[in-house]
Image (spheres, rainbow, N blue to C red):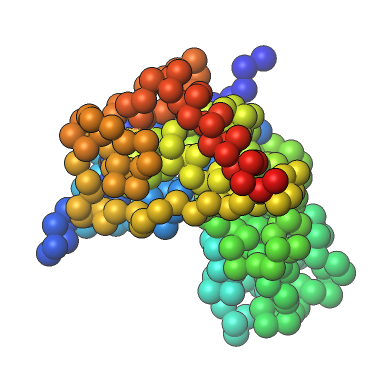
Length: 340
Ligand code: SF4
């Protein structure tokens, strides 16, 4: 049976007019998300991944941005629905977890009360019922003795526990889609792994679709079924996780992969990507990655490569598929040779 399509983003563009020029934060991004699936969106800072997701939830002010395209959530275009309908969808059917849990929890209020508030914002159910639900949720996200911890203040929680509490808050209404924006960046490495495991388990328990935003391809290696790589506001490669790691096709993705450590390739050299991501006001002509790309050739600084679907693996690069396979294989061999 085909999986239920929850979200379909089509040709999304988000441009901001500033005194210095037009910031093309998102420039024609399309993707889908099914129930029970995790989509990882990967890219450096300023690649447009967070703005893509904030716009999906219509959390940016449409009066100050030039937004086009469609965000179809179970068939409704969220860019067009009324504010009342949007309020119902946001937080209830589509929920978001942010990077810094401490900034999202008010220090003066008890953690349990803050989660109860999120229940009342949509349901208005009785106090006892809401409290029971919060304690259940705190338990399901792995907070020990949840009935006692309910009354704690945020400063009495560790960073990992605060993130667990934020995840509980995002789940109060059994949403269909959970968007997690760099949910582990502010946490220790061991806690990061626990939070990723938790999101993976909750995806199954709550049967949701998950969008996981990260700058680190390694973070999504174990949890995403599908990966979209973004650069300069554009999707430059989109593939299943297995394809993305076994046969990446875009030189930028190669750079991301070569800059993360692999436990099974101890001793291999980490290679950073040269240069910095471009300003979104002055995106380079042609391929936006060309000033940093070691494989650029004649048309790269003039012609923008279109996203071309190569057997369910779309990517935007002028190199031929044969050259991509050869170059990736040579880079892999060189990396291992240097390490040995
Ligand atoms: Fe490199 Fe050219 Fe491909 Fe861009 S289009 S990634 S510059 S080879």
